[in-house]
Length: 442
Image (cartoon, rainbow, N blue to C red):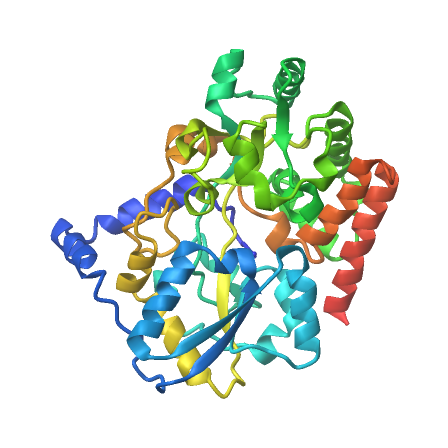
């Protein structure tokens, strides 16, 4: 989930505005009124075909994914056998399947260096000459590529990540969103004194630790490209980067001070809506689209509009950071006997009338230049100038070879629980990354 240039959310929004100036209001209206009349992309797929699709179960449950898949099935008479894999183990399960030759017709995966594990050039269709490539936002396009070739359709959210806070709890305590790391930690201390858990973190699931937020500002900096190149060549290690230690000191300090609550080691992502909705914790690391697509808005006291967005503070950027989006890619197994139908699905999803129908009303910035029915989230709209000032591209996850959101999260789990020291934690993070890097270069 690789970027060549820094991706800033306001830049995407400006591209969207520029694109809209080239089409008349009448054309936009016509496009939107045509949305219900979905049609298949190339119309070349055989009838009665069933495609297998592997991916993270949570990713495949997104409403826009369900909508577009159902529309294609309805139009073509074909079916998609969606095999959603449990989030924290999805990567390992997929790699096992690929190793044994169990390759689906379509794989959905974030466009990062992990794709090299799936022998992407050997197994997946090269879309570099597809017409829809020209419709992808220039700042998103690098994420679709491996070695300069486009291997997947980026049908996903252009979300804004940071820390989301309960406005009503803040107001009750007389608190304002902090501007610095020190202010943030002082705010957490005030919450603890008032008997409120500051942060919810689904530590059990490992990936929601989201330590890439701490690393993005390090590599999206004047020295960042050089650091990244040296890290990927194994000329330096995390241990040689002072901010990596500062990040781990933050996680250890936050756990010891009780910022994550008493039971953080058993907290799971599945009940984050309940924790936030009942006000059991005031802050969460997350992305804005989640409140539109996943938050159980109707069931709890606090509604999605009760939450605001502020920078994520993880010890490495004094002013905090907002992260630009990673995007999931849909990739086609070029050796599949159902390759014609699989390509037809991708073609269908790439049509403006079809992706606009799927993203109609979804709180996201556009991935496609022709995307006009989405709506930037209320949280982003309130702080877009702040995002512009301290936002950073998503660098760590897509561009550090060997980076693992899950495995790295599990190592940091052990630090947070007190099982290992900071030195041991950073050694294990380096070891895991280097082992993966070596597997890519063999």
